[in-house]
Image: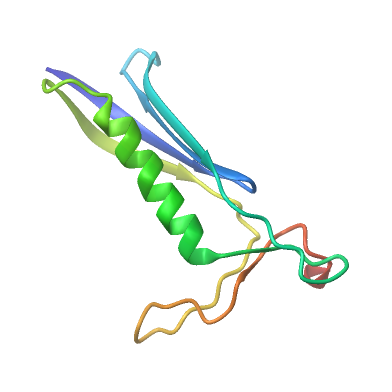
Length: 107
């Protein structure tokens, strides 16, 4: 049996999932872009629901490439860091598009 690590890179233009073996060898990989929105000059927004959908899909796609005797023991994630999402604490639903770190409103 092979014990693996799933790395999730949720970036500014795409999400990717990479599965690594203990020796650092890449075992599986999936990547998918998502939409960028520019509603005004200097504004950059993302749809938080689309980010979630794309990120979970690339994880599934990468895990689907594994054989039956391989298992993921841990998950690491990196993301956009300064991109901001506000959501309703009761429903978990985003209340506005994500304001991306590149957006001039963050200055």
